[in-house]
Image (tube, rainbow, N blue to C red; front, side):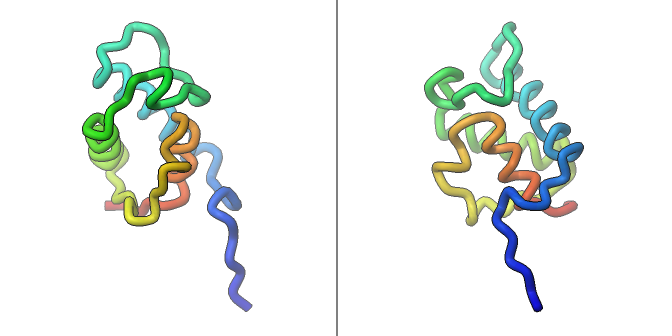
Length: 96
């Protein structure tokens, strides 16, 4: 019997935290931000992330984590907070 898990089920917590850490560093650099980026921050409302910078973020994550992210599965609800993106990436990526 094949089990279909919800995207949040079975997330590797250590890997997800690694994604959060890399995202915080990349966002700080992309946005020239001196203040720390936390996982509960709203990407567009609090950080002012544009769609172009969102793409740069995903490309930087792929590069730094040496993964491929299945962006076809990504919806707007996956791109609300830093933590939302980290959970999506942890669930929808594979080694490059």
